[in-house]
Length: 169
Image (cartoon, rainbow, N blue to C red; front, side):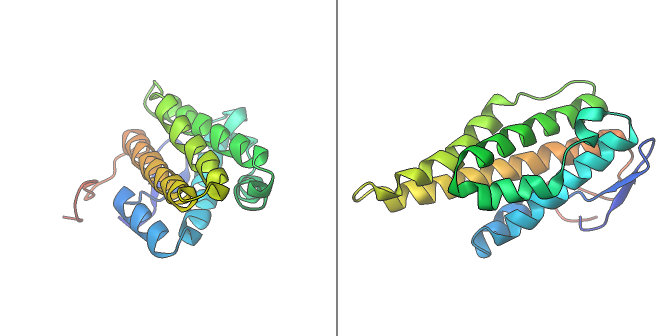
């Protein structure tokens, strides 16, 4: 599932990724892969919206999202704003591609938990556990985002030869 596809009608190339691969690479690289993934996915959503005339998606700034996720994590608020807006962008892509957006509550809760749980790191004896729980919530949330985007890309255009739950046939 590592090949890019061109979405018919949108004229934009997107890359369906296995959600499990996104999760495993994020864990193996201790979150470094997820930063690159976050940029790529935000760029794909921006390009998709731009090509179809969706101003909200077209005006998003992938680099700003990455800076908010990384450097903005020091202040916390930029990171929270970035992940909430990322969920809204996923829903916008779903509305365009599928005609209806999936629920955003679970994704938002997972990503907010990923941001807030590590803040309890100074709590005696459970601080490390909270940090790990936050990382797990983040990895689970980005895997779900990728799965939802894969579904949107699949509906937007024919993706031949790809199986989202298994290997390429």
